[in-house]
Image (cartoon, rainbow, N blue to C red; front, side, top):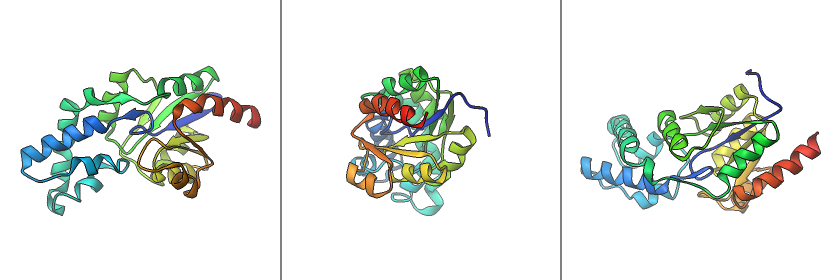
Length: 208
């Protein structure tokens, strides 16, 4: 396990730290135009979280899924990054971790090079990035980083936190509402990241 600072917090990326829906919609629309395959990009962006291959399987035959996924990632890097924005509270959440002597890591289902493009474009500073992992598999990366807390918007993020024995913080900014995140086993559910700094300060006081 890697050496950590006082503590480490993991964050999901899409719909946790950033609103990537406009960029992803653009990339899928361009892919559809290029391939001639009809893709409902509005439906796609309503269920973000899993790696691209799982979504692409809904639109392409099995033997074309990998090629379509690879092409999507190339289109995303060129055309989609500028359409993404930081979600409310994202900068403050990362700053709160630093202020308490901790480190932030991103563990996401997104292709890591594209995730890095998003982070750099929005100047979201984190200490490590792991991509193309979803659900309980996120727990492996969280354990490697020594993360005691994981923050995400998807039921798969709750599973990842649980797999790492980390505190599961759900944020209701993605495809699941607060009730669904709570039912999935989140230890705490926040409306969005604007509430995270206060929650973190209280959590650290209680666990000191």
